[in-house]
Amino acid sequence: MTEQEPYVPAFAIACGEHALQDPTNPLSWYARAHEYRATGDIPGWLATIETALAMPHYSPEQRWHRAWTQMARGEWSGWSDYEVRTLYADDRSPRTTADDWVRWIRDPWDGREDLSDKTILVLSEQGVGDNIQMLRYLAPLADRAKSVIVKVYPRLVPLVQCNVDERVTVMINGVDKPFMFDRYTNMMSLPHLFGTLPAFVPWQGPGRRSRLPARMRPVRAGICWAGNPFYGNDEQRSMPLAYFAPLLDRPDIEWYSLQVGDRAGDADRYPSLRRPWPPLVNFGETADLIAELDLVVSVDTAVGHLAGCLDVPTYLLLPIVSDLRWGLGDRTAWYPSVRLVRQSAAGDWGGVMSRLGDMLDQFVPSDGVAVPDAVHPNRVLSATH
Image 1: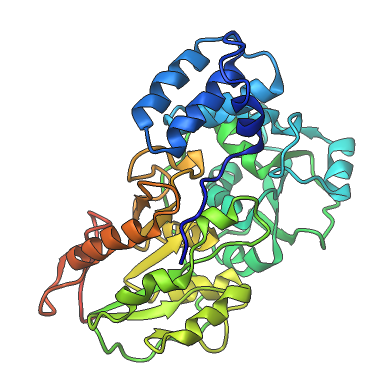
Image 2: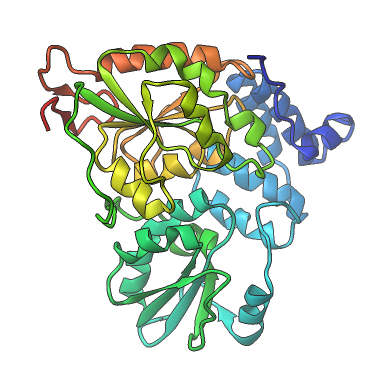
């Protein structure tokens, strides 16, 4: 296994070459701040960011970077700046012909208009994990509107269908075409439109998948070690399964693979890692499996969001340059059951695994006696359930 090079976004490469040559441009300071974060120097990052945020932000690009910075600092105003993604070209906002049709025939919801006599259409965007993160807004949106139509990716349909009521109609993104609606919004605009984070309400799996056999060890845990390979930062957020090898030999944990796609076959090299059969084909089935586990360990991909959405204790493993929506600490306001485990140096998955091993020592019950969950302070783990 080789250590990975730190991920450097295109803006940091472009701006970093001229960093602080134009000290009046906040982009220069954002580029310098990224250099600090890529080396793990969070105090340096924070100090540099203070300078950038004090400057005027005129262009969509400047506001784009301010949005991410504010999110990292836990400031909800970042979601307002995040609306410039429709003006600032990047790989997170793909547009489709159907979306353009929607925008042509109807106006967007502004977050203030009364929807009690209107149907609102919610358009999916970005990755599956991003959409799972926004699912908690569907119920509050249904409380405001006459009805809601939500378009979701095919693999999410079973999960969403079993967690919404008759006020929400689920349509398949790219297949179904809505024919009657009054307003629309993009999925990732909901935090801005609501202006707050709704109270957390755990979701559940559809309950269609057969249950696991009787447990043989005190703890059942699932792992996911790789994300979508087409995502720009996937090389940094995903890891070789070999890093998990020492933990897979623990006699107190039954390990289940939650990996799908080309990397799922990696599990065949480790007899102690069980692959579900039949294979997982959508996130409803993955949710059913996760619901039977005591713990999930995942890199920053949709499985991590799903486990958090289901309120299952989760260790989310993050590269040193991670999505700034996770903030800078070891907890996230989005999912109370998720604990963030970060690299201390670029590519240092070995250090992450060492800390994870210590966390598992605290999590696993001793002699089969229930102990407070080391991830979720309000949950108690029993070795007999």
